[in-house]
Image (cartoon, rainbow over all chains, first blue to last red; front, side):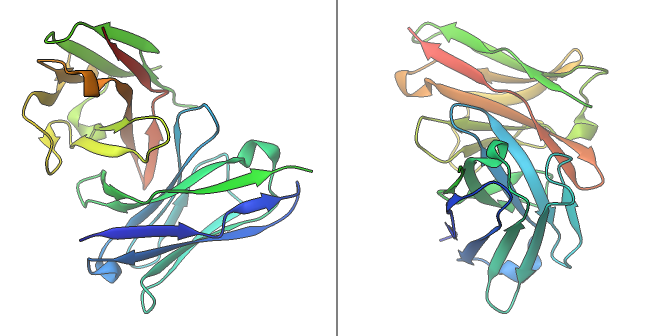
Length: 117
Length: 110
């Protein structure tokens, strides 16, 4: 069965960096596009970034220039490098598998990132 | 800046029917936006309900359906049950690899 497991969250000071990982299993990771979606405490879902199976990437305006999505198909793992973190980046970060029909079919359980001094 | 709009809250009686909508601050939602819908209960990861306007994700009952109503995407739940009480989010594909979520609708079943 499809499993997505995020890791790497934690507490970081404003201006700091963090790298999230998403370990995938149960499907042929290299052939699927993937997403990062976040949810600030008490708020709604926010799409963050997208990576195609060939590595082509896209970002929400709120993170463009600060965050970088990548993948290692040999390790079945996706990453989110987050730099210049701000308080408003505090959220649970979910990785999600694209369903090839402009949507998402599977979600991880999320990892919490807290940006605080 | 494109804003995807949803009703902040809605209520439905048990056994009743409710339609939640997903619009754009400027313009109309069409199938070309490939609207998708997600359900989330507190403390849990989202669950995919509908994608590409009206295709149910695996395991989603047929009392849950998606459509385009007028200039908005719509999610209709018939025969509402207590465990339908959740937050519901729509997402629209804006093209060029960009997606935008709506602000979500809190559905109460009472």
